[in-house]
Amino acid sequence: MPQKTCLECGEPIIGRSDKKFCSDLCRNAYNNKVNSDANNYVRNTNNALRRNRKILEDICHDDKNKTTRNTLLDRGFDFNLITSVRTTQKGATYYFVYEYGYLELDNDFFLVVKDNKAKTD
Image 1 (cartoon, rainbow, N blue to C red):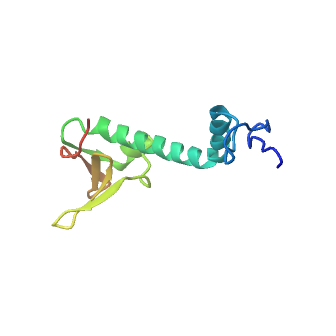
Image 2 (cartoon, one colour):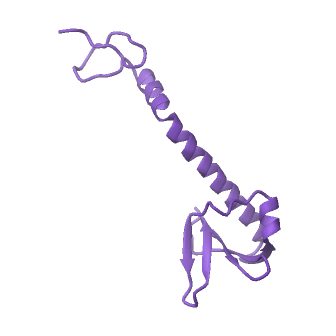
Image 3 (tube, rainbow, N blue to C red):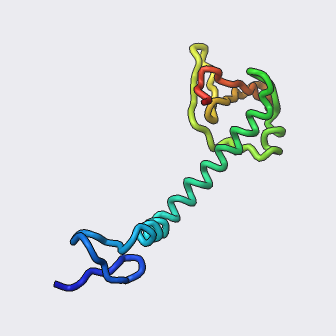
């Protein structure tokens, strides 16, 4: 029976017959390489969502505040990245980034709100 070698470093594997790596270090290195593209995409998206949240948090001093589209854009807000959408009974649509949301008003104004029911432990 031929000896199996580590998928990461090529060293001989000693131990169980179904082992694929010689150590945890090699296993982690291999999986980090395999998942790096997906991890970068997720990392970049999460960073952009955190940036959006921080912008809304800075604008929303109290539980709500008004701002303009230009203010949001100048700070780097990305309107394509949100975490949820909520429609009120009156038909108003709020777009949320975690616990902070915004509602588009007339003349490029936005109402920014904080959902105090959201858990922020």
